[in-house]
Image 1 (cartoon, helix red, strand yellow):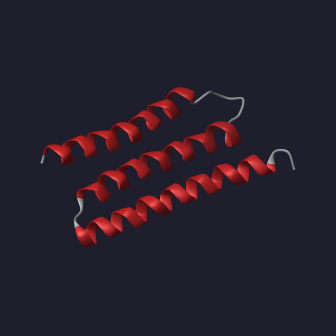
Image 2 (cartoon, rainbow, N blue to C red):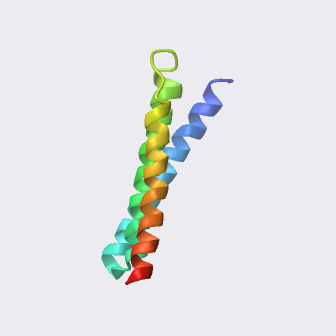
Image 3 (cartoon, one colour):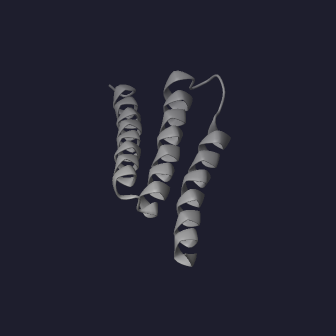
Length: 91
């Protein structure tokens, strides 16, 4: 039970982020509001980050540490959203 609960939480975080990215992308195609595009890209990076968390902490816990890719994906997600907000503010 001790190892099952974190695995379920990590997988639910991945699934939720991926669904959010998909829904935001679909909404962007319908409305072409650019903030939806930047948010969809951000959530896609967050979904990838959560997938790497699952791989790092559940599938390969002792083999190799994937801390650097996890942090880089998090930075990419936040940077994309900030860039998108600044880009749209200037327009």
